[in-house]
Image 1 (spheres, rainbow, N blue to C red):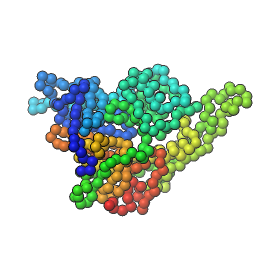
Image 2 (cartoon, rainbow, N blue to C red; image 1 turned 180 degrees about the vertical axis):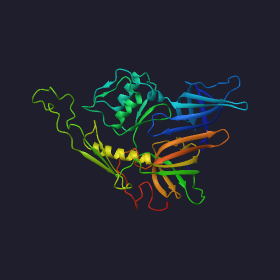
Image 3 (tube, helix red, strand yellow; image 1 turned 90 degrees about the vertical axis):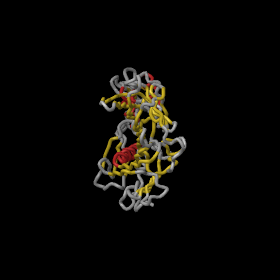
Length: 383
């Protein structure tokens, strides 16, 4: 199988820093557009310890030597029968604390300031400095007219995500319990491929596949109109006469349009840019909204053996991967949006890799359609 290496299916479960061997099976989900991954762990009572895992315990699942989730046990359920007594624990990334907790007082960030600085400042004031922030995108800083303030009852993630959306980025996690500022810049490529040919050939590595496409959220044309004063000046009222910033300036008239050629022209969407839009941003915002809609309405999921796509690399959201599936008539490069790792004591290790169109979660223009088909599929049979 492409990407299979020695130790590719190894798994270690740690509870409060110590290896725990009482688990029976687990699933572990990570997604590009979610700030906290989730794992479900089935385990049994242990000799002398009938309830070995508790809510709040630190938990980590390591796949092929690489952390897949690092956080805490959030929920436990159990059914006690005469013949068996098993538990099911839900584990969430450490970043769940940021999702669940409110920010409290003292959150007012004056520009110029970056999203990473806002995240680090907010985490610090919330007492969550253990969560680190990695910025893979370096979106433009917030400028004049953008005062990042939050109410004490705002949830941490909701506050941060509202400002992340204004820079067309998402917040996800790295499997180690940290936040990542990300966007699909179409530069990270998987060293492996997903192949499902008609013939049972040696190149096939997809055990089973699921395909879904729709136009419930997509539009042929997504239009974004700027709605902000062109000088973006704060508190222009009351400035002395002659001050160049003494006027609010005319409303911006910039407009951006993104076209999804795979969708029939009757479907159109219009949106207002809101704050933080300048220069070419309306067009970028239109492309972003169009490409996020693509990710919601297109899904190709392939199940493969093992956890890794290459030595030392887990299958992970954010990568482009070559896909050839003759049954679904796909021959294209797609974007890995979600992964689900599974392993049981009795069975093997598998990974479900859910892909979206190549442009998903990016600011790139849509590819052209071929024979009325979307850019994520070929015009004819793959291969």
